[in-house]
Image 1 (cartoon, rainbow, N blue to C red):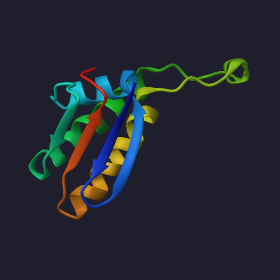
Image 2 (cartoon, rainbow, N blue to C red; image 1 turned 30 degrees about the vertical axis):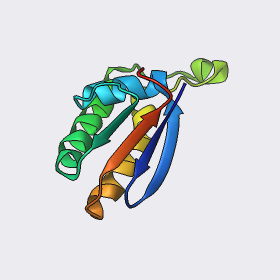
Image 3 (cartoon, rainbow, N blue to C red; image 1 turned 60 degrees about the vertical axis):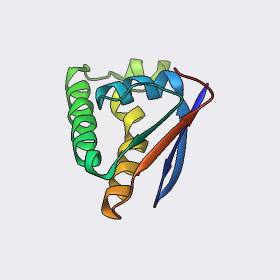
Length: 105
């Protein structure tokens, strides 16, 4: 299932529910079919996502050349990056972000 995040000021992104779920839970949101991140909540949401991204990056061991050949694994920070960017652009323009999915996830 896809979850679409739409900024009131800066466009939209889509991601799979399995990726969106931990991001929304981290910022204290229920994974309902529809929801909002208000302008007042944006700064805290950005900070939480950035901190979790930094922590997950610090927890990962350095990759060797052999690991890179097998295919790179996508970390939490890489999955969170598009949402962080959308939230930051929205915050700069005093907007809000809505999300929409086919059902609760």
